[in-house]
Length: 125
View 1 (cartoon, rainbow, N blue to C red):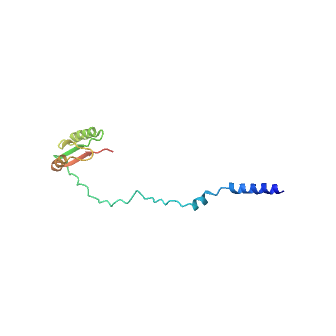
View 2 (cartoon, one colour; view 1 turned 90 degrees about the vertical axis):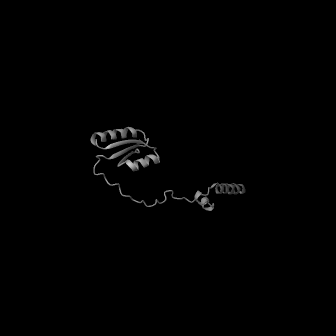
View 3 (spheres, rainbow, N blue to C red; view 1 turned 45 degrees about the vertical axis):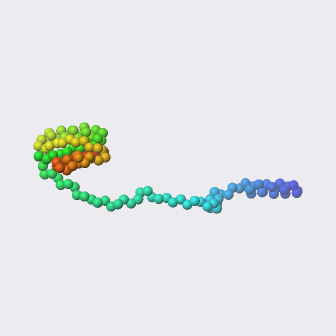
């Protein structure tokens, strides 16, 4: 009888110690690190709107610059646009120019400001 009580007590103790404490209870007792998350979107500044350039009344006698920025196939497209203008507006002067993709060189920009009445810029997309 005494042996039976010892076996029962050992079995009860084994069952008691084999029960897992739930993860939620364990997490609550452990101190978790605080993580701060920032929103990467931010708030953009307000946009200042600008008026569009006034439309030309006629293209007769006007100088139109076609600027190739080096975007793939933009040179070919601008040639076709230039040919269309020569066919449909023969009195307009077409000037082909090449500039960098990220900016227009100062000498080309000053020439455009001085001589151009309109500009078509091939920037892609």
